[in-house]
Length: 229
Figure (spheres, rainbow, N blue to C red):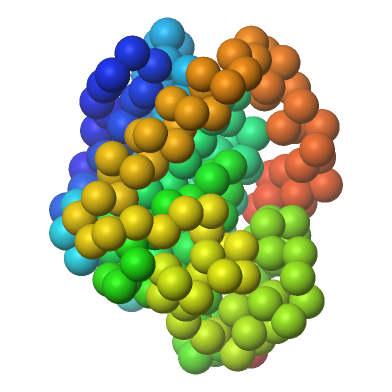
């Protein structure tokens, strides 16, 4: 399960876990509780990281397939509400990609303000085309907002190309690459740099994010279920 750790003077770390960190309803509820804890704290920046091989391997589709239709619908709504919340979170947010960020894990990373990735370890990709799954309107809107370059969007979304840290930074999918094993420290440094550069009140930052991403947030909150190709 996820947990929160407060470090340095102004940063909170949201630890995703040390497994594949696949999203299920109970895991999303756990993440929401962690975000509540961070938002109520004096932290000014949130850094999200896993440990080991995966940042997140996306939605647990095998588990979803075993649920009743109503429970599956609830799950997809919950996941998109999580994306909307991170997208509008009222402080600096940085995803420290310690390992693979696949499918829903990549979307979760994209919902953050900034992304840090290791240079030669881990892939960032959206493989829904391989799985035969269409993106919901909200998911697609989020990805379009964070991947504005048409050719990169095409390769990431339509063809499911995998991006290493080196290739991801070249096309602005991530903001910074670092040496293997240093993604957390690099993300914390980046978060502190952004906080120290301009200390914006939480309420102002949250309001601005909601304003800028109004369309994406509204579509995510509709929470439609993903469908098959």
